[in-house]
Each structure stands twice: as C-alpha cells, then as structure tokens.
Length: 404
Image 1: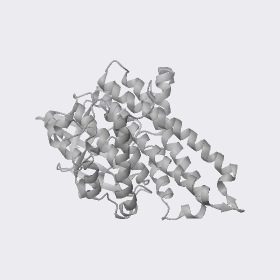
Image 2: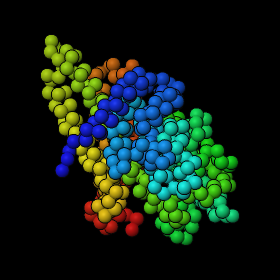
Image 3: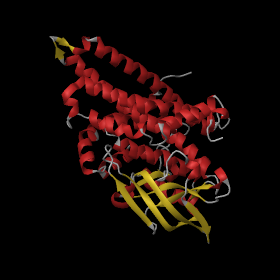
C-alpha cells in the first residue's frame, strides 16, 4: 500500500507548479477583469500535456495509461493554487473530465473531430444537463431529442452551464448534452449527445455570477437543432448512466480544485499570522488563531489523502473492471465532493478573518477564492445534499432513497 506520489508524478507536480507560479498566478486579476482566459495560457498548459492527460496518444493526447485521473488530480490541484478564483482550474477540469467521456464512448468520427483540438488547448468541452426546472432531478429533464432521418432534432432549454461565452465568442467548442429520446422508457429513455456550438438553432444567454468571472455561466435554448448521429456518446438510451459515470470523474477534479484553493488560502493565513504582531508578539501565538489553522490543516490533509485514493480508484476501475463497481466509486467520490467545497469555503473564510481588513480588498486573492468555491457549495456538479443522498443510498441502501 503506497501513500506517496511516484517519482514521475512528483516531477509532473513540480513542473505544473513552476509553470503556474510564473505564468498563471501573476495574471489572475487579468483573467478576472477581462472575463476570459488568455489563449497563451491555455496553449502553455497544452504544451505541458495537461489538456491531453485524459486523451489517448493517437488523438494527440498524453494520457499516462492507467494513471490518467491521478495525474489530472495533481494538475487541477496546482492550477487552483495558482488561480484561486477557480476560473482556470474549472475550465481545464471540464475539458479533462468530459473529454475523457468522449474518449471512452464517442464514435470514431467524434473523437477524430474533437479530441486533438482539446489536447491542443483550442477546444472547450463542457457538460450540459441542468434545466430551468432544477438540476438535481436529472431523470425529469424536458429537453427532447427526436430521431429522424439519421439526426436527432433537439428542442429545449438548459441553464447554469459553464463555458457558454467561451464556445460562442472566444474559441471553438461544445457541450455534452443530456436529452430525452424516449419519454416512455424511464431512466433508459435518455441519450448523451455532443452538441457543437456552431450548429444552427442554438441561442445562448449569459448570467452574471458573483465570482469565477474568468469563466462564463449561462444557458442555451435549442430550437430544432439537428444533431448528426455521429455525435451520440455510447448507445441511445444509455445517456442517464453515462451521465452518472461522467459526474464521478468530474467530481474528483472539482474536489481537487477546491482542495488546491483551500491549501493556498491556508498557506497565506499561516504566513501572515507568523509575521503580523499584536501586543508585541505574532498573532500565531494566540490559540484562537493557531488552533483554528491547525484544525483546518488536519481536515484538509485527511481529505487530500482520501481524494488521492478516489483518483487512484477511478484509474483502477477502467484498467481492472472487476476492481470496483461504478456505484461504489460514486460513494467514494461523493464523500470528497460533499466535503471539499464546504471545507474549502470554511478555510477561505477563516483566512480572511485572520488577515483582517486587507482580505476585504481586491489586492488579496482570498475573496476571489471564497466567491469561486461557493459555486460548488451551492450546487455545481451536484449539490451538497445530493452527495449525502448518494452516500446514504450506497451505505444504507434503497430504503434511504426518497424517489423509490
């Protein structure tokens, strides 16, 4: 049983950290104020192989076979340390997590069309399930995909989707979209379609978020959008199950982003309280502060180790299919997703209180960190209570499931 990163993983971690400290951290304010991530940063990350971590080499990727999620976990952690606003790490984690699903279940034509551009940092891939009626009850989505003459005719509306402006204004891209293709088939009546943003009939809208300003949030209205059959992921009728599988991958990386931001916030707090003096002594000598930091550190270290286990398990489940069921993996992942955003927000809030007035200025990155991570506290990639429901379902059993 090994609890440390391999020599190769440590080298990768060091490489990403050095790049981010030199090229990302000094430009976070630029990202926030401009509302977009500069192309040179994305291409720089692509040059390090980061966008290709989850993509096979034959499509221009750099996937370390059998360790894809473990390396992705490292990369997103380091990106979130550098960009505490969460804009860049979320952009990248979406491309990694959902690009991975395309590499596993996309048609040969879809993989040829999309994956090499994702690996090069030129193409955004996001997830598109939430609708105006609510995001957690995926089984009741209304967007329809009617099959006709080799195409799916899509009508409906999606909301609270990341990367809307990116695929319509800044660069190419599209979203993996869950649609109802058979209203009478229950959970087996959904299909996952990749919908490029340049198909006719799509109307975007942009929301004004309180944080994470470097990555847009919005929605789409689909009016008779014709989606070619080659854009189906997996099989028709299997979309609901692929959606759940994809969320397990994405939630690992979301947790990595939350932990990376929290780690940096805790370090900022530690360094400040070690130097700031009150009554002639560093405020770290006051137990009300030092004990709070100690408790936050202990909780964060525990969660980091468990997330490393979740990433390792996700790698194992694809290289050794009998290792663990996807339902068991979802329990492990949900523990991480339930804890990471809340703990990260708590650590950022504590750090702001330790730094005092300076933390309430835009010169301090802690406020951006707190605003960015709140998107995951309130529900992005699965709400807090939804993670509890998944954990209860797998640990207690179906008796704990309200929809059964």
